[in-house]
Every structure is written in C-alpha cells, then in structure tokens.
Image (tube, rainbow, N blue to C red):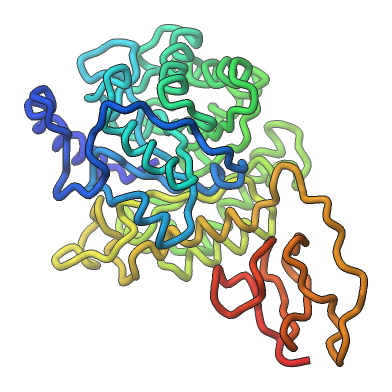
Length: 417
C-alpha cells in the first residue's frame, strides 16, 4: 500500500545498514526521533474501540525518519497506528520480520515504540505485506504455515488488529493469495475479536483484475474481514472526485461479489490514501482528504487510512513540490494535517456498542428551539442542539465534545437563538 519506489528505496537503505544492525545498531533512514530500543516487552494493549483501528494511519517505526508517535498523539488526539511492514526474511524462510531484516522473535525496537504508544492510552495494528520485499504468503507453503507465522506477531505484541496489504507483485500469485486469505481466516477463528482489514490496489472501476481475483478467493473461502480497502492513487487519479468515483465503483464490485446490498457493502468498504504527492506525481491535498472524509462518513464506510504518518509534514527544498518523498508530503502543510482527518473519522465511526443514554426531551428556555446539548448523548451529522445561547449543527458523529468553533471541527455555529 505504501509508495512504490519509496519502499524500494527504504529497502535499499535498510540493506546498506544491515551490517550496523548486526552490530546492535537500530536501522535508521535519516535522523531518528522514535523511542530508543529497549528489552522491555510491549505493554498490555489498551482497550480501544474498533473505530480507532479503522482510522489508524500507516507508520514505519524503523524506516523513513519516523517521528515520535507519542508527540503525534499529543498534537492530534490520534490513538492508533498501523505499523508497517511484516515480511518474510530477505534471506528466505517462513518467519516474521520487520522490513525483511529484523526478526520479530528478537525485536526490542518496535516493542519499545508499541509500549510508548500504549502508555499514552493508544494501541497499534500491524500491517503484513505491502509492495516491497517477499511476503509470508509467498514464502510459507500453506495457509496454516502462513497463519502460524502471523500468530507469532500477534502473540509478540498482544495485537488486537491486523492488516493484510495484498498488492503487486504478490496478489498476481494465486497460490500466495490463497495462503494469505486462508491465513486471515484461520487467525480470525483463533483470535476472537481480532480486527482484520484487507487492503489492495485501487483503479477507476474500483479494483483491477487481480483485486477482483482476491475478492473471489475470499468468497471461495467464506472469509469476510472487517473491511476490504482500496488504494486509489498511483493510477491516474486526479484528486478527490476520481477517488470517490472509484469508491462508488468498488461498492458495486463488493455487491456483485458477495451479494450484499449497498449499505452492507459500504459497511465493509474502506479507503487507504496517499497524502501529498504520490509516486506517479498525483497530488492529494488537505481539501481532497476532507472531501473523501465527507464521502466516507456520509456513506458509513468502514475504514479511512493513509500512507503515511512519516510523510505527514512539509518538505524542505528540494523535495517540496519537486519530488515524492518517504519522509514528507511535498505539498504545503502544517505538521500532521492529514493525520487529523483520521482522528475525525474515528469520531465519526459509531462504537461497536452504542451508548444507551436517551437524548434530552425537555426543551430549552429562551428562544432556542433545539434541544440543549448533553455530553452523554450521541449526535450524528445534521443533529442540532442549543448551547450557550447559540444553535449548533453536528457535521458527523460525535459524543462528549461540547459545541465550539475549535476542537475537531465537528460543530457548526448556526448563530444566536
């Protein structure tokens, strides 16, 4: 799902640094600000709602100049990250590694990152696959062996969520995709409540031939994850309108494949975007992300993520607007502008168990006709409330955020009443 040639570049940098890694020095691509390695195991995961796993943006903890994730959490309110990528060892074998280089069995660096995130009340998902390197579905001979390798990752970090990033060249290998989908089904059965996403390439008609083949494999194995997500970038997409058109078409693909109605298909549909300049020179700005967010929330989509937190900062010349970078967006922006849309999506996604507090029924005094705001009430887009002498309208799902012109931006001030 990440930038094509940038992941290859990161792999080349990683290979160059392998000698340092063997000597006990953590791999870094440029200055490192992520927490230092530790021998301490990852802390027990915080109980997060699935809305946060659905909104978690991708984050490379060992490559592409990783920022301090706890600083990102402080600045944005984000609670979950999608750590990338779990691969087969570069030298061959069926055991999980980070980036093909760092065995999960002996990892301390990523565990330290996970512990720091959890200490602040957040959590992580791990993403397996991606564009670069050898995938475990290719290296392991059966779904069972593939699942056993991924189970090591779940056990090592106490994971509650996992993402299967199935794209080229792996998804062109039908045997590998059979192993990946079979492994996902096994993990779903063995780990009740595990949040599973499947991410694949996006095209103008939703997804291409190999993406449709993957969906048919899932249907053949009677496997349904929490969502199937497409990546509408690196394919001639011109901003948000082209992306939302692809999402509409992908909804039709899901309906025809699984026999779902439109609402059910959207409830299993997600998007993974690329913030800023894509590998092929497409540009996706904050305005594009906002338009796609509005589409996703209005259609009650299941997932909204992007590649990546590492890129969610403005470049310094010569990268700014000139070329695609793995460590910045190549568009004008404030730090973490794109990550903040993930936070908004998490707030717009209803929790698994909706609160039972009934809305207030007593009309407010004065000339305000809307019901008074209540912190315990769930509001959805279009709901109006009276608060401090003004009428406010919710733009999306919210609870516990008092009306104001700041915060997440969920409330619109309709004026005094």
